[in-house]
Length: 157
Image (cartoon, rainbow, N blue to C red; front, side, top):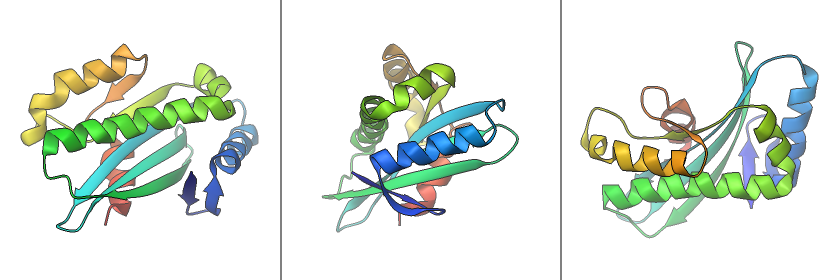
């Protein structure tokens, strides 16, 4: 599994975790937040999913990494939103197995979901937020879900 960083280029998960840890060590007394969010874009040829991981030094910048995956076109919005959420939660589990569990226990982890009170996705809010909170994470939706709706969205095309 490879991730892209605008700062460091293409990285393995292990390299990404090391970069995150070094970012934390630069200012160990600062407040941090770890954000994972996925967005997607569908064309007639494929659906592109982008999962972003953001380590936010609150009030003092951030670093982010993203992973792009392409699948056959998924036209059903409900199915796509579920898949986006699933990809975000899968990344948390993979990262926990790679030494990120200590960071997650120390700093808040938020799963950012590209749904909101406006538009077609509003009917999914209760069930998707319920799913994310049931597995133990904080769920954020628009307008607070910048990890999905801004960072990941930027790389979907």
